[in-house]
Image 1: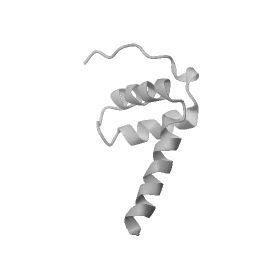
Image 2 (image 1 turned 60 degrees about the vertical axis):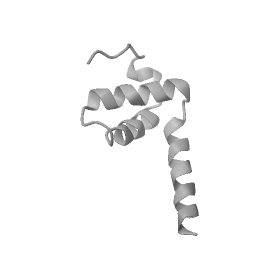
Image 3 (image 1 turned 30 degrees about the horizontal axis):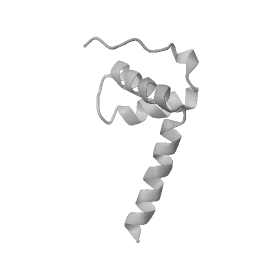
Length: 65
């Protein structure tokens, strides 16, 4: 699978990229693809994964009610 070019790792927040790769491996076992997906999300919204985790916690609280 050929992936469109993304910026080098140094252009991304290290924590966001690490969290993103971990989350994206839920969808693929290929670490290269997981990193690429994470970078695409971070290009659109630099704190994508922090916000995603906040939203998931909020939904979990709501589901417990």
